[in-house]
Amino acid sequence: MNLFSLLDLNELALGMSKLSMFPLFDTAHYVVSTMALKEQPGAVDVARRSPFACWFSAMLHCFGGAVLSGLMLAQPSVAPLSNTGSVLLASVVWYLVFYCPANLVYRCSASLPVRLVLSGMKEVSRTWKVLGGVTQARKQYTDALLVMIAVGWARGAGGGLISNFEQLVRGVWKPETNELLKMSYPTKVTLVGAVLFTLQQSYRLPVKEHHLIFAYTVFLVVNKVWMMLTGSTSSPLAPLEGVLYRTFFALQPEQPSCATQVYPGTLAHLSGKNSDKGAAACATQKRTNSAAETGGKRSVKGSHTETRKDK
Amino acid sequence: MELLAFLNLDELALAMSQMSMYPLFESAHYIVSVMSLKEQPGAVEVACRSPVACWVSSMLYCFGGAILSAVLLAEPPVEPFSNNSHVLVASLIWYLMFYCPQDLVYSCTSLLPVRLVLSGMKEVTRTWKVLGGVVQAQKKYQNSLLVMIVVGWAKGSGHGLISNFEQLVRGVWRPETNELLKMSYATKVTLIGAIVFSMQQSHILPVQKHQLMFLYTLFLVINKVRMMLTAPSFPFAPVETAIYRVLFGMESTHSPSANEADVSVTSPPETCTAAAEAIKPASPRHNGSVCCDAEQNAAPSAEADVDCSLKLAARDDQQTAAERIRTD
Image (cartoon, rainbow over all chains, first blue to last red; front, side, top):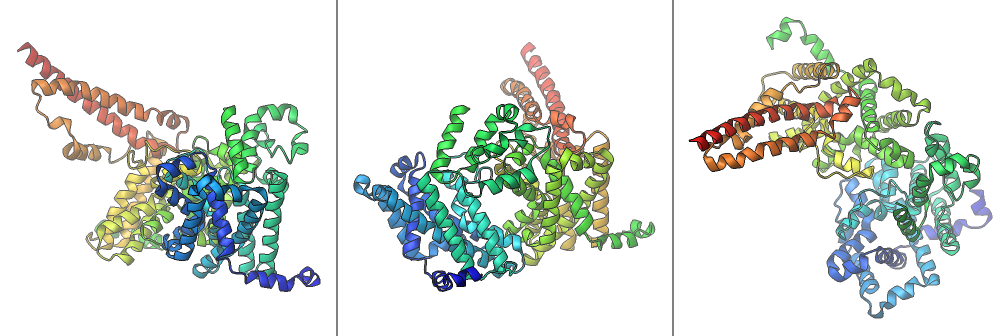
């Protein structure tokens, strides 16, 4: 990585890779996760009805990744709760976000500048989680790339992947959708990160660990901030994804609804060629796809309601 | 087993038990599993919408048994994915099966002769899996027969047992039915195999391992081929119904007194129609594709037929009894 030495970023990258996550970045992660929970429909009602269910749900939001990766590696899934400091911190954050008088804490952190900073910090903690998952899997399975990817992915995007069961705690059961069927932006970007870190850890990618940490974190934060500022819901990987999808997974040509359904917003110029027939034929599918493609939880929610209205 | 020695099959059985499953038989297992996934309603649509979900679902089909047995023994459920080459082969087959241009691979493999061979080979892997599960459990629990049976069963017919969760990945949730409520042929036959192998491994059954493997595999393959070629019927259906009637039959033990007759006259037809309704959603599929679903539907329908006729007979008896009482 000559670029790094050229820009004198090597030192910075090394310093960053030694950063401790615990007090600050973890707190940001807990705040953003709990806020995301509060913005789910029905969550406030649950908080009033049963604080315990709400607390449990918040803990699944905050520690979902660690729980899931523990399950996958047959390690105790209550291990994240053994770290008393983190759990106490998360509980305090949960209490303040949900039950603070006049809703003060939520309103403060929901203002755009504060939220921007908090979300950026949360993305930083994602890098550490993915790397933690990959190294955790590598201890047990030295050469199994797939296991490393899976555990890294689970650790980084755990809250999303177990969302069905997290909803069940709150008394919501929506089996017709899950994070695999409609992958959100964080899930996708975590998968990319898990693949990259796995390749790096098994020496297939000629990059040093701290360089990759730095580059991936910058990518995450810049993306997140950009997406929040522009309010755009399409991830920057969407064009690449559309191309991959069209090359590998477009089904037979006799099914136009499948072949032309690629990402309406970003690839309109591509699918516009045969839009006369295709657009009408696969209108419904496009809509569901747009939901699959959106980033951030708020936008997913929006498109959910959209699809529901259309149905 | 003098018979085996007599027919000079001992050598053959020994050679067979040392056969390696990996490249050929495992591939056949993956192909048949992914094909049955593709034949599930809505699976192609899922493949179109989200390839990742489809991949995870087909991996659960291919490695479901290993995952379930790992969960049961508190071993890492990601263990089967640590075998890179197996997962790669399965992924390749998944890709070809779902996304091959012109659907070439699927239409090739769904030809009856090809499918016959592949299904036969898949049944061979079942023996190895059941035995693997039993041995795996025996390492941890020396003398507990039940654990061995359960783990062997889970490993051999895992994808059926976790089918509810596999469906959840595809966004389908049908809690009203599961593999325990309606056991398919594969699940039943695996349970028998698990019991037999557990008894052999704990030296209760005076048979040698390779001989039992040979016999069980032969039984599985012949049955499967017979079921695919002719009318699908579970070979143990008569035994099963006999056991059911002796141990679990409830109504038939009542003596037909006046009041009870009135009550039970109404109940059997109801249960009968309920059973018929329960089979209905399954039967058109089984008519449509001759072979694949034979495994799944054969047993319940055969069972239910027998059941229905039994109950109808019982009902007739009770009706005549009730009439007799009334005329008296």
